[in-house]
Image 1 (cartoon, rainbow over the protein chains, first blue to last red):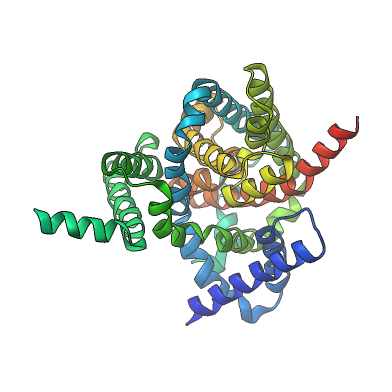
Image 2: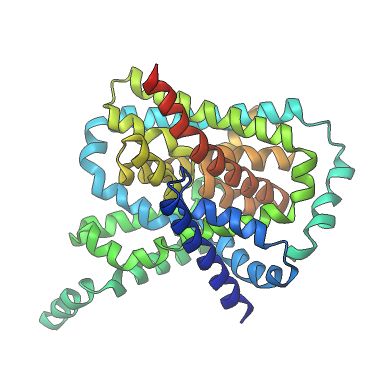
Length: 130
Length: 240
């Protein structure tokens, strides 16, 4: 039941987000506003267990959710065929640029993390995720 | 034989086929991936997409027919974006303490990914609507579609670019980060989530729980930053 309650909360936040995005002409997509609404809602202790019960399985199988769109490559073979090589070059090189830049910037900015201290942090903070 | 053909004609026209094929293929691909010890090249999304694309090619099934079933899985992307609030909220203390480094790294990584994609695409002579579809490719697919539409791109193409970006990151990030000698799981996860969103974050979650949490955090930050800043950047660009 917790999972269903949590899923209902996720959908309610998303719907409220869609409504807000459209009514107030906000630049944020509905699910993103839903994310912010859920964040605010998590201050209420009663919602935490249901939200965890729905969010964890959903995020645990996040990669499955990208399959239908991935298969959509098939529907765009025409466009991909015409520019395929150049598009792939842009995608591959820019992804590497994004990974390298974010990793190097974060390494430069984060105070040096001694291994033994940083290791227990997730365990101490993530008590709700078990 | 004729019965079989009739059965196929019936089954292939119902949404049941797309949904079943997607789930069964993914379960098999994930099983192989796990059995092989989770090497990046055996990424289950990559091989599921390849197998299903081949299946559609061999059977001649049009994509919309497949999608009529697969949409039930696709639909969950929206609630999944909302659900990102949970891992981020759980780490709010860490987030607050490291807010500036994380925000700057997300901004720098996102700008590098989107900027270099558009620059390389522009230099290669890609049409404008393709460039506008490339810009949000480091953001998770449903949000990328919304941003691409606002920028004047093709939403469906933006979603395909986002998935390809996710796969490139999930398959190659390990080697790139090893070459850069980045060992901390926090930074490795964060970089994966920044540049290759959900598919990268899914890979990070499988490798290390801390890396997974930072990947989810990076993914959430990327969604917020891109949704807020990309239309703004376009507005400034158009006015000058």
